[in-house]
Image (cartoon, rainbow, N blue to C red; front, side):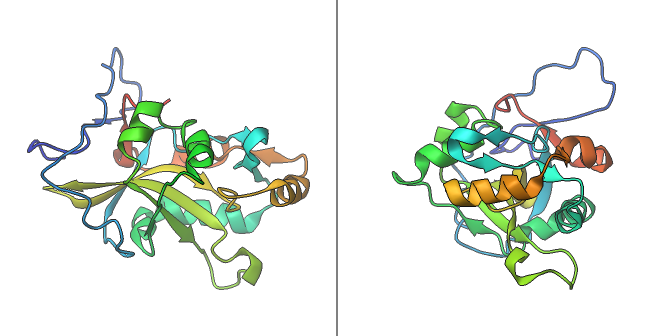
Length: 212
């Protein structure tokens, strides 16, 4: 990344690195305002935040992103993102956080980012629907979402950092959709971390002190 007042200051995760220093917090770059937030296709470089593969089950918010071991469509979407990270920059849209959705979005995102970062970067969050393969049922198209933070870097240009996955588009779910999804998941579930993220390119993983 650029040393010219980068918006995000990062560490690259290196396997088996001993006595690694803590990663620096995110630093906003006021020289490059988020002028591209409302643009859909950013043609951005995509990185994976170190803890973005964590799966959670928040019963109070009716959100879950564990996946069924038998759900081949969702598995294909995850593999598609890991193998083709830049696909996340296509059809990416800005998430407007307001008084109606702030509690819910923050309640989910704070499992990945600390509260101070959520407040500071409330205007930098984006989501991308992921569709992998030609034979996907209509009810599933666009259900798989990837959530990111947008950054502009003087070297890389537009950059998206993956925060988390929402395999079943439950970011704005209610009792009925959550119950339906958990019933369909069944007992044989797995986390995204356990199932997939060992295959992520290590050069694509970024670590921040703002991660939880």
